[in-house]
Image (cartoon, rainbow, N blue to C red):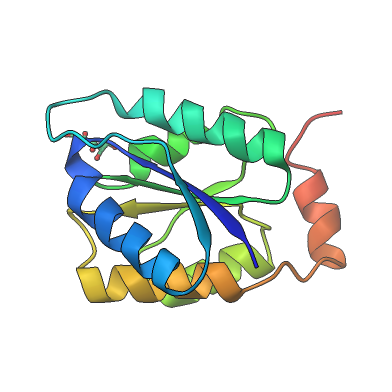
Length: 144
Ligand code: RB5
């Protein structure tokens, strides 16, 4: 069962709380890297902190929540070994795990409703990478 790191900015605080509760209820280990404050924060700081943890761990998954998920993904993808994907639907969540070996899910609290967000989290959590032809493609993400 996957271990999760999770982080958010002020615009993702309430959805982050719901996602943590949801994952813990399903038996996952969740490490919350904050913020736990609603005061304005800079999302790249949280994206980088989480991305470094996921990259160092090697097997854990990450979830980043901000207003849109977009800025978090851009910042997290600067860290080698991180494959962060913004998902607003369950098909994309499954596909980005199975084809792209995404290891960080980025959610937008201002974009997706709570019910959809938790279904996206479930899809991301249970789907595994297919490997094969997809592994060769993912290997091309990093220049040699
Ligand atoms: C904060 O206002 C907002 O810019 C941030 O949460 C995120 O949506 C950035 O991508």
